Length: 235
Image (tube, rainbow, N blue to C red; front, side, top):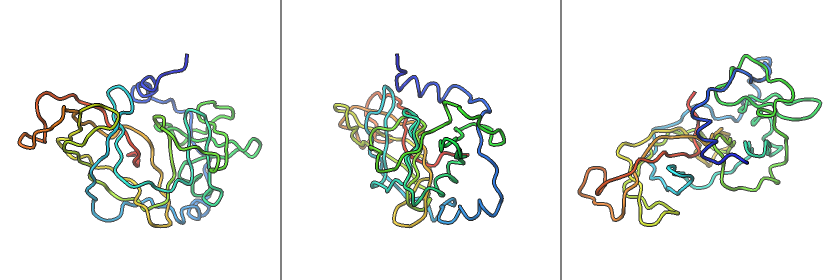
C-alpha cells in the first residue's frame, strides 16, 4: 500500500536522515561561476503578507502568500524526477548541491539533514532523480520536501492571518496569534532562489464569523493546525 501524505510528513518530521548524501566537491572558481544569477542573500526589510490558506492534509493547511512565480526546476519526491529548464540547469544543480552522473545523467541530490561531506552512492533510490525537461512537468499538489527553483530575489516575509477563510473547509477561518517570519522568493528579477515545501509553523482554525473584538480575532474554541508552504528552508 502506498504511504499516505500524513505518513510521509510524519516520517519527514520524526526520522533523522542518515548521513548518506552529499554532492561532489568542486573547485572554488567553478562554484563561484555557477553562483552568477543565484539569489542567496535576503534583500530589504521583511514584507508583510497575508496568507491564503487551504486544506492540504488532516491537521495541516497549505498557506500561500504571493502571486505565482516562474519555476525553472522542480524536484518531485513522489516520482523521483527532477524537471529542469535547460537555460537554468547550472544554477539549479548548484542550488540543489547535485552531482550529475556522467553515465546515467541521473541527479544525485542530498536531502535535508544529510551530511554534505559524505558522497551519495550510485543507485541510491531515495536520492537519485531522473532528469526531464521542465516542459514535461505538470504543476499540481506538492509532496512534503519537494523542491523548486524559481526566478526572483530572496526576500524576508512576515506572514499573518486574521480570520482568513480556509479554502476546502466549510465555515472555518485561520488566524495566527503571532506572525511567522520566513525567507522566500520575490519575483521580477533574473536571480534564482531555492524553496522547499515544508513545515512553516502553526496557526489556529476557528469557526466563522470570527470576532474582531477578541485576541487575535479568535471567537470561541479553536484548533491548532500545522502550516506548510513554499519557502527557503532554514539551515
